[in-house]
Image (tube, rainbow, N blue to C red; front, top):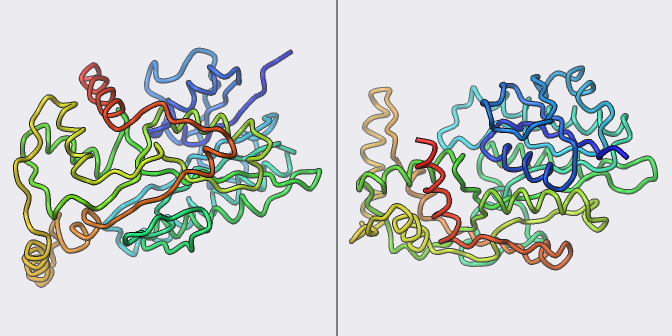
Amino acid sequence: MSSPLVLITGATGAIGPRVVAELCRAGYAVRALSIDQPQHGSFPGGVEVRTGDITDPATVRSAVNGVQAVVHMAALLHNLHCPPELYEKYERINVGGTAHVVKAASLAHVERVVLFSTIAVYGASNGSVLTEKSHANPDTVYAKTKLAAEQFVLNARRRDGQPLGTVLRLGAVYGPGLKGNYHRLLLALARGKFIPIGDGRNRRTLIYDRDVARATVLALQHPLAAGRIYNVSDGRFHAISDIIQAMSLALGRNPPAFSLPAAPIRLAAGLLEDTARLFGRRLPVGRETIDKYTEDIAVSSERIQAELQFKPCYDLMAGWAETVEELKLRS
């Protein structure tokens, strides 16, 4: 009997190789669709590799043909300083691409579509703890388009009338393929050139990439997952100071010895930002950057633990230690 075939879109992205490897370990055959060719050795042997764009309906229909399930990861990712001219691209890829995937999956009688979404759809928690029942309040174009994409997945039905899709709202994902803010933070700490801003007590919700892959397998297999939204995290809320400490220890460095007060630094950054704007320039650090660094984001993942028996294997220390070790091996 042949193994069930799963299509993974965006498989060459930061999390993709982990998800591909975990599905192979779980006994699935994998077809990977990405806009880029995978790096040599990034996928296990036997993975079917296709290149193509999810915004092309014909490409998506061909990729979905013959598969039992789809893990839809392909997306245009978060960009803090997103210019308006990129809004249409976010809409076309994150919303339109998802619509193509869901339509093709429905026509091909696929049994399950798992969408990678983000806890960014909630916005800041502002001292509370957010759950899947909390009101979504996205404040970036990335989060807004991911929330819109979720509706295509949640509204879709299989031939038997049962829900087709499952939405995984991921916490901030980190691992050796990491990009974006945590990558920049790790590099700055490694160089000893980072000074924290604020008292460090604002919370963050994280998940290690290997645990994301394990949650994906559960979302594909578990009958209760159909039609559900799940927040995915390591099950804890981490003060930003604790994250910095874990990263520093993994790097073999002492954490920064002091921090800068948030309010005056934000004021100064704002004045510099306004001055630069008068000359048609944009500074890398401004009010928005500081607000994002100091905002509080605490999102509960109790639902996936209770309903799918998801148990994270990596805490903050283990995850960052493995991340740094693998990055050293790759350098």
